[in-house]
Length: 312
Image (cartoon, rainbow, N blue to C red; front, side, top):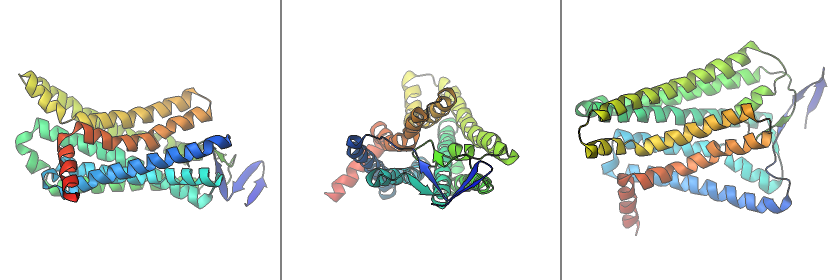
């Protein structure tokens, strides 16, 4: 390991991630837990993708976005969990500088991709409920592909901005990252300088992308609720809002855990509690998304059942 000292600051070729547990008896349990959660996440989201692509009844904008969200969730969880499993198995906490930057970039890309796709899905539900007669005209295949492309480009831009700023860092205060993976906020805090660009990234860029997604979702559901309130019958209101139930549950889970981690990191000084909280949106949320859509969505359940019958 290269390790240079200059004016009490350190230039390193690798970082050290937080240990899950120092108890050797817990290592096999943690290994099995994370491995099983990862396999359930990948398998669940793959089933959603297969169900959408194989069933012609699901070839519409809502499920097109859902299949892209499932693919993004697989990539998102694959940026952190395999490395965590490997670290538990090898008892190693080291990650190279290049590997850390790569993991951070992939984490931002697919995390931002999830957020943007949830916004596109909220817009899809807004058009379906508030403008049902023009739904097929507005949500045409070209617009759907364009929204996914924009989501990918915005995510790539967000990742590259963070990456370029971190590459400007010459010296670091410490080699230890207080998380199980290369969390962007943790990596930015290791810099020893008060760079103006670092402040822009951590404050302005993050707030812009976060507010853009959340405001889009909030505005869409504000219009949806206003439109549903004008429906005279209770059964009509329930039927209209039931089409949004799965998406709203995923939105609450995604942003609820993210806000919880942010608030927890600002209130609590314990890195362990913040790291455990970050597992919620990096591991648990992608794992629960397929269950939410399959259990709450009749079309997905029917498609999965038909696919199972074909396999048998």
